[in-house]
Length: 83
Image 1 (tube, rainbow, N blue to C red):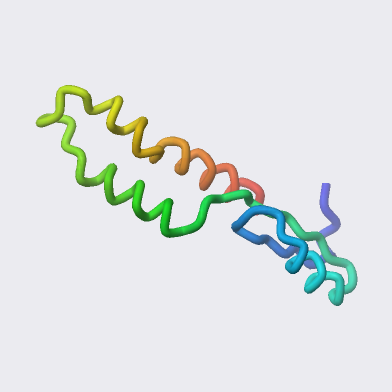
Image 2: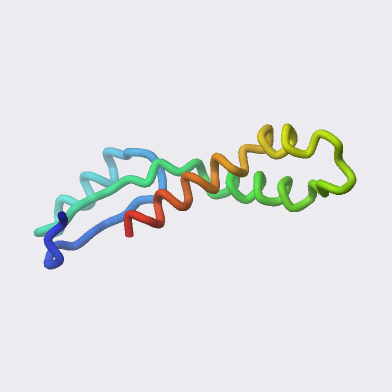
């Protein structure tokens, strides 16, 4: 359980020493890294997902899997649940 009086700094990306060093100047702070891929990769997989029409594609699920949208969506939901 996190103390509600502490500052919570969330970083969407992977662990970064520069962010840790920056955050050390704040008293009573917690830093959490969400380990998300860069936003461009998430947006690209979302666009490919939206462009895939299940009614016109016989291998829709394999295309969905190859675009990593479900994986990225899972990462986004996990990150959002930490807030």
